[in-house]
Image (cartoon, rainbow, N blue to C red; front, side):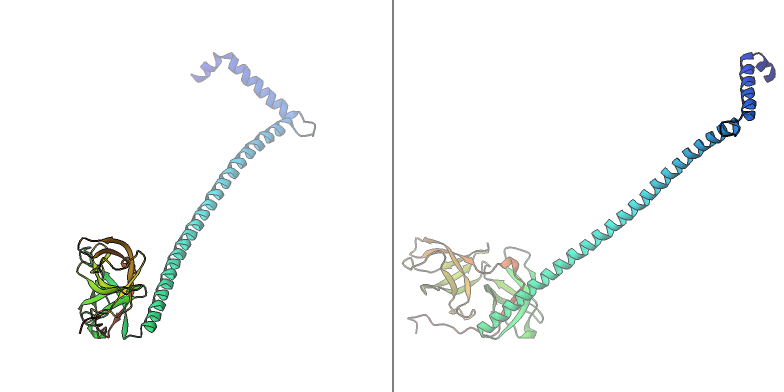
Length: 280
């Protein structure tokens, strides 16, 4: 059936016969190099196929090598990033350790200057409510701490111990609304009472309206309360208003940054009570 179909297409038979004839002639005819033309053509065609195949293989090889190299670069970048993070953490640790060392150095200098019986303590917690300005320190009755012992820092007065336990104590900060301390203005020696307002500020009360008071004046402890030793810094006067009752209304900016307390000194020796002039 197929043979009959081919016979009905003489053009196809003619083309096939011509092609076969050309192949036979090429097999017998030599090229300029002395080789049969058929062999030269066949070799050239096969060489081109080989060239194309090799190009594809080389391209795939280069692509694979590039992928492997890129994977290596990614792994190296990840390793460098991890090393950088580790160095950053180490730097933060070293900075914190340096800050702690500096704080301890300042505490030691304060202890030497104060010439008082003190013990160093670390702040380990703070009150969760802003209504009660207290912190917890890691020293208690085991180290001889008692209620109403003064707590100080290199910057100034911190507060007093209000609840000691065996290994920890609660400290009422001077800015607590129920806290107070005897105070005086260092420049004029005018006395008053510093009171906490619970909002981070202090007020200097009971200072006569005729007293010489100026913003920037330094306010220190007077020692009359029997808790805080005399002469420790409380803060500086920030604002002065004459009140209606014959007393100044004085706002004091605390010397201590109560948001950054880390180490403190607890004064174990009671303060000597000062007797104001005129009292007997």
